[in-house]
Image 1 (spheres, helix red, strand yellow):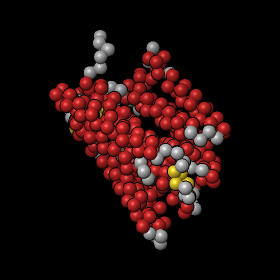
Image 2 (tube, rainbow, N blue to C red):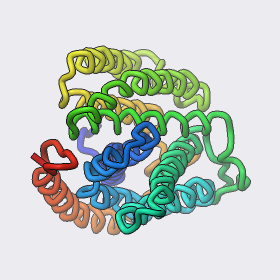
Image 3 (cartoon, rainbow, N blue to C red):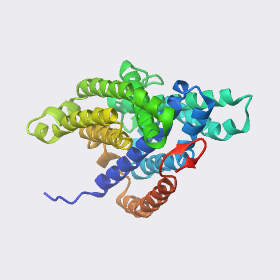
Image 4 (tube, rainbow, N blue to C red):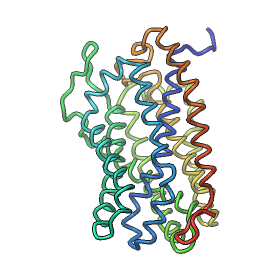
Length: 336
């Protein structure tokens, strides 16, 4: 047995890395928009939007990279998954369009500014729900016959997908609250501190519910988590979630501005690891593995060379943008 990973496995981890970066980086700017209703003052909303204005569009680069890489590296999976996910994916993209337009148009009008505030929050809510529902649809299983999707238009609409949709919404809101703690000062930061504990509790509750249901959706999920001796390898994941949650509440109570955001990112990372534990090596759970869906080897090699060049470039300019706009912001002084 060799420990050297094959091309399909390497590309699967590359795609997972890109999707994870999209989730956490676009997650906090969707999250701050979800919190708009809790900050009715126009000047607070200006500051909130300015905390993400320099980076929000760059964050979505990872969505394009992840989606394009799935299409190129695992074309069979793309062909099967997309018909099952048309409704939530289209809703997500429309939500992102409204959210993106709101960034530009909100500053161009005073009389109609409230409409763009609604578009900013509403578009972000629809995008977050769409992402969560898409995740739930994949997890609960997709009907496949031969090499094609064989389900119906409404298969994505189930109690479980509504649960995962709600989980993503509250998770993004909690991430957005900790981002505001990191980036703001004064009353706005104090309000974010007041919101964060409740949102974190809701997020942990959603994680617990999704985690409790998921092993019963597919036999492979149960085996991946509870088969002996595999359970010894995966047990640290939920234990780490508990440890991070305890530390997160302590940092919020101590009002350590930087740590809550870092710990929320860690919590998302652990959830992503748990997702990988559940489904690997399947890309369409219960139906198609990454090896069955993989493109020909020559195509995989070409894609691997491409992402090996693109990912360091994207990481470099992303890091530079965050470095330039580091620190806190307020309505009078800007970044400082």
